[in-house]
Length: 264
Image 1 (cartoon, helix red, strand yellow):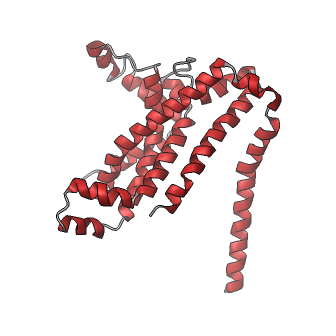
Image 2: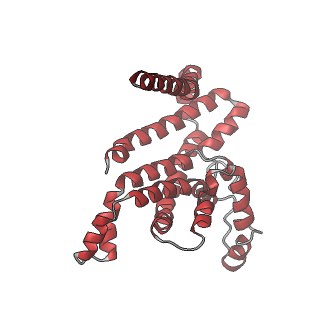
Image 3: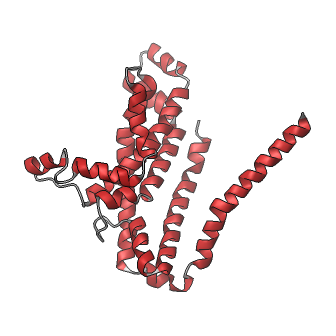
């Protein structure tokens, strides 16, 4: 039995290591080796590239804020409240994780575009036009990133030991105090993990953004869109910009690693 267990473990380690090398290490190494290091200053010094990076960080930050503010109530309701149709609501919330992002962009466009289901009334009543604006880029990024936060936090809320919450209520704590002092601290690791996943997904968003917000430099052209543009004109710039985006993502995720692995 021990020998068979050892063989199974070895096989899993071998397959897992091969997958990491083929799907992660080799592509990243290829980017590093092909990067035009001698032209780093020239490429990164271009105003359009700096603007695209700044816009990506701004859009992803706002998408993270919206994902947390809107996603936590959704996750709490799905985890703690039993109601008819809960499975359907959960499926709808997680739908952006499985549909092609461009489909999400089309859905946002027909909903909030100038002639969209809701957008036409926003334009007519308030003069608000969302499509092809920075706000549209934020909404597109939030659309695709929100499910990652909801799924992570809902799972944590479901598995959390509710006896501590019940004890706090027995001692006279209000619902708000229980939430702040007991529930949130108990799932802080999941909150950090869900936020990091949502932010990373928003930072790399492409399909929904280009469909709903377009690719306008300085307004909606985030770094992924700038990389796509560079592929048509300057492959060296596309490679270097890809490394920059990769580096930013790795740095942020690595800085949060201890928070979501070490938190209870």
